[in-house]
Image 1 (spheres, rainbow, N blue to C red):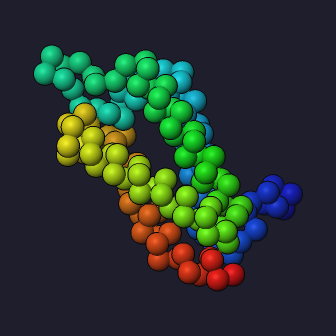
Image 2 (tube, rainbow, N blue to C red):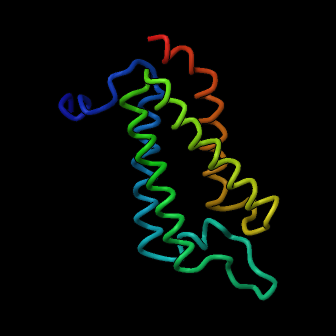
Length: 141
């Protein structure tokens, strides 16, 4: 077990471990989005006037690509949390994700506040707030 734990980010506190976890989960979500259009359809759970999902195979793969890019930035940040540029890039991934998901919910109507859609809102908003409050602590180290 100690050998596995040695691969975790070398910083104190839970934030770097959280970024590592979120990155791994995001990478898995990317694979799901590439494998099946239904993953994105479950996430963007709103329906068109005709009752169809707003998603299609291309939008699902685009979401998978965007999510994987965020995953790469976040795992890099987990291991380089004392680098201001990397910290800020990771912070931006959560801010952009939050703006995107709120926009799809309140602006475009492609999602409803239920089911799988709630998780990214919670992760993006709470991690954004967490990173904003902890920025100085990790960058001063």
